[in-house]
Image (cartoon, rainbow, N blue to C red):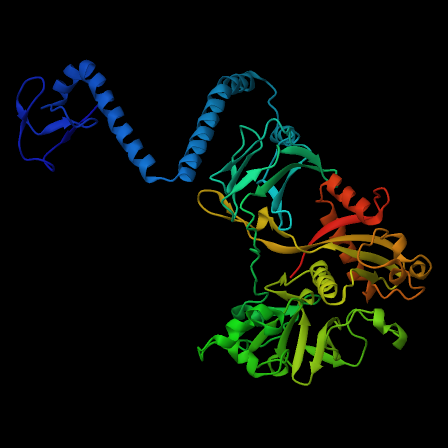
Length: 542
């Protein structure tokens, strides 16, 4: 209860509601009743407070109508759930307040209070869910469907009945694991989504996590690719590119002015390059030199390598040696080269001058080609070994119809990889952008699904891979069972460290698969019962 002046809004004096004295002061809350003093306002407060509250409610109602009229359905729905969550949280606080007071009184009367270490230990032993919602979303264009997998720790008291999932506005999926947890809103690029069946709890291959499995279908059936091409090395950070093994810098300061996709890796964009008449367009400049030849002050990137000019590289950072290149066997015979992985352009081997690790190749006298997964930028890996192999497997599948790779260890252990599919795209929660309204904008990445299996290289000649991949629908049995010389397998030789790293990467990725989907895929491709030896992994590719 207070009085405010009306002099700023009107110079005309009005009579006091109690004593009728002319004044310019009125009730601060409703601003409709005039009082000459606080004493007069106190006398009239018992009657006026009823009217004052009513007028305040009317103003609030008008303000609410204006907000609703100016907001969209998605904003109104988001505001409703936010207000509901705040109400539930406040009710929970009020409900727990008497219990907290009782606990404080018991602690104050206790003669032997618990030590801070004991209290901390008791709190940490409680099963609670920490962190944000972790999910992966796979886009399957052939089925016009999205597959959403929400990963949940096994300690979380989660049930399918307690979670709430719904589609808002046809393009926003809302997920809430329980009424006491926040709602996560995920925005999809298609406005006509509907849920297939109900969300259900499933088991992951990882025994420490469970998952909530949701399927969405695009009723408009207009599911085009939304994966974005990205520059692996920004031009302003090119001087920070280094060897991944020893962190030795490869480029001088202020040498690289631009980073571009190689036209040979983007044939569908060639028409745009050729019809662009802007003389300042640096993409057109790359066509003036032979394809795949380094250009001064530029980095040309394709899906697995960075192509640079020799003069842009520090002289003391690399060595050009006449030794077997990356992925080749040290004692490789001429008769075995047809089954061994090689780059399209073969040249001398490029190694780091400090750690002697193979980081690329010198394809001609003017050009160096560096492998993405052998480099770091700003102390972060440019790519991973599993991504490199997935990209190469897709390239061989599309150009040579070869779907199997054999990754050989120096002790002749072998990881047998087979490409299952490569049309899907995946978005992960840790790569999603979150704005102030907690709306997740998905960042789509291309992926390949790969089955892998560890065996011995010596057994490969005796036991043909057809015994493992029994349901091969691409090749006829005669071609697939050529004795001792299976041309449907490409071998790539790695050192022990890289081989172990690759196996660990694939194993970790396989733990994120839904168990029943992984088992069904293995059965379909091998024709045998699921086994812990044969695993399925979803690997990012470029």
